[in-house]
Length: 332
Image (cartoon, rainbow, N blue to C red):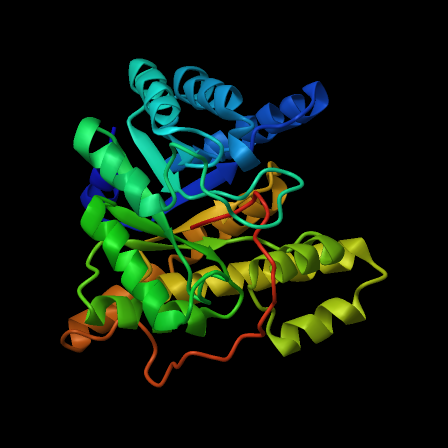
């Protein structure tokens, strides 16, 4: 089933999980063990990333098919323009279509290992918008795209980045998934500005529960996401205790998701890093709390409330020169 139709037809927020193709047999066993647990939560859909430089093309398609056939999950394949000509891209898309895949997340992608700067492949595409146009013109996929509440590192500024998101929607993207963030004000500001310029598709926040302090510092420094100073101080105070960091990360993500859902987010896309415990705990708590019901109650009392808190404004974010985002949540 098409993900855009799943979102449109749901009367409650949609929850989804992102996984990456493992590089080892042990990693694959761990992934499918996590899937056994997470599939019990009945996600609206799951997605599988596409390695840097298209390095996991075959594996991505294989895992998407297994998720659908063995677990009964609606699965979306990530797809990038990196390291392939237009002819090669069409060949992969034909393979996806023949495999019965209905959903594709179209991304520019990261450069291959060892290549610091993005370079267009000769005979290939340069922008994800071009990939979306190709998908929309010749295939029947539901198309998702990425967006950046804290602005993509390659963007000239926030407004040009927002206009590019609108161009991707105009090219055929039916929903957007955000890069990871830890301050909800970024999301509320982005949604408000997006609606103001005519972006009407669902904008699903992407959330990564913090499980490892050094790992999350690396991810955020590479992709330009920021960690609020108060949260950073609490993480630093627990730096010598991995368990304490994980417990704080789980609690923070639960509160973050609850706030997003209470203020109208259409769902949550979890960057699981192929692990199940934190995502299971957070989603179970959210379904018990049902924070989205608060918005429904408010709607019954007050006509047309805004989809973000009053007074929310865009915080400043640190500039990270010359950096790029790693595979988990990597977007453009």
